[in-house]
Image (cartoon, rainbow, N blue to C red; front, side, top):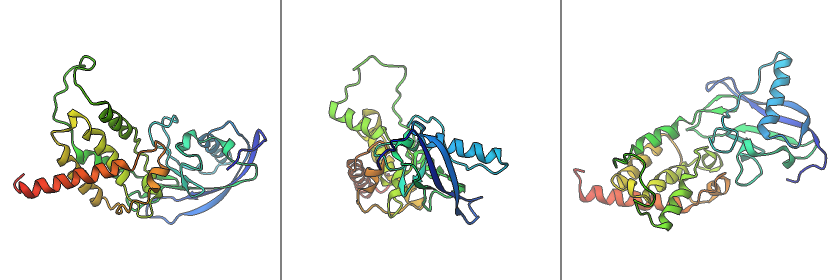
Amino acid sequence: MGGSSKEKLNLKLKIWRQKGSNEAGHFMEYTANNISTDMSFLEMLDVVNQELIKNGKSPVEFDHDCREGICGACSLVINGAPHGPEQATTTCQLHMRKFKDNDTIYIEPFRAKAFPVLRDLVVDRGAFDRIQNAGGFISTNVGSAQDANSLPVAKQNAEKSFEAAACIGCGACVAVCKNASASLFVAAKITHLAHLPQGQPERYERAMNMVAQMDKEGFGACTNTGACSAACPKEISLDTIAQMNRDYLCASLTKVTNPTS
């Protein structure tokens, strides 16, 4: 979408309102007037909420924390796209110059069975925490900070690990997937440690446990459409899913070979 040549925007907002997980939700229409194109999307919502509070109405609830594209809390679907129209950008870093005067903007929560709506635009992403907990901790005693380069890691492995570690766990991959699969998130967390020496002792057990927890949480199956990687604000590669599948296969074969393990 092109930016407006004006410095101020007048917008029509269709925002999802829902009182709780067991309540029916619906879109409500609001106006956002005199919005600066330099504002972030969340700052625009702040202005809307200030006006609602001023008029004695309930503000729209939405998640946010760092507002720097780091924490992954700003989980909004904007005009059908997780985090909005700008590629590799979180909602908090999306600026209103990406919209035009008199635009109608639809704002919804991330939708997935495993992400129940708590209220309005806020969803419960505790499933991600439980998946990470299922991976456990590394058993390597790292001790105090080591000297630089005292633990050699191949450059290629370090780069792959770093790229996977960029995942902020926002859930955009789940929201955009037609099956609501969490494979990209889980794969990023598995791949992060799979390429480091510290992650080797529990590597295959970690993959099996995290995938099992993902299935238990009710996420859908991955059909490799690539929509997850395209919507990811950190552009996590589909290669991580291939890595997860390889580690899971190795874990499965090891379990068959050593049934008591």
